[in-house]
Length: 215
Ligand SMILES: Cc1cc2nc3c(=O)[nH]c(=O)nc-3n(C[C@H](O)[C@H](O)[C@H](O)COP(=O)(O)O)c2cc1C
Image 1 (cartoon, rainbow, N blue to C red):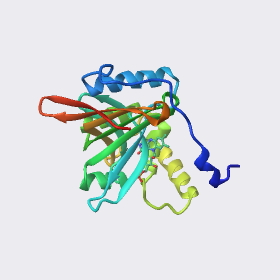
Image 2: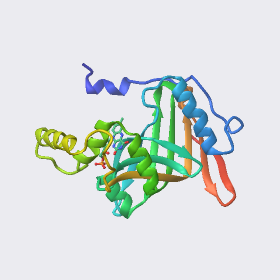
Image 3: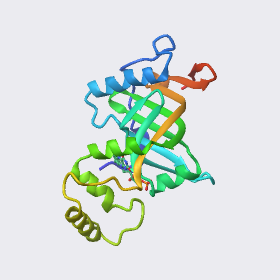
């Protein structure tokens, strides 16, 4: 068991890779693809798990992990319940961040942008691909609301399985995707002596401005 007072002595030196202006792609989506492919090759478990940060209009922040389910030059896609706490935040304040931490590669990627709901068709297509149990789960969970007990949830799940046999589950209207369109990407590579490499891309009129940030 670790004594909390010993946490100050826990430290890791980073040395595996480096990142420079000359080695990065001009397009941050391309750079993301290179790093994502390396995360997959490194056999990182759920390399597509990302922290989604949202905030209310009063600036009250929240964060949670969601799974990246696709991306292209128009943005990064995840799926969720449109009545959840995150969706309530995104309705009043669509600015959000996505954060990946691939510790085995000593890397993080921070993306900031604007979230918009995906089309009904995209949500339908993805919902249809989900395993049966996950489809039923989407119906069974009033995500982010108080549930009296686990038993209540499991009973609801069983009832819904009766109602919707496998292959017949429609997408709930309150369930679907968001696409986050970035205006800011930061690629962070851990380096020795805390002199980490940080490459920032910010969107401007004709493309992306690239700069190095101090660690
Ligand atoms: C690895 C992992 C992946 C997850 N993926 C999703 C996801 O893709 N969509 C989702 O709605 N919740 C996902 N969750 C659950 C969320 O973290 C969160 O508990 C849930 O969405 C409710 O968040 P909210 O109350 O802030 O809206 C995942 C959790 C973990 C740990």
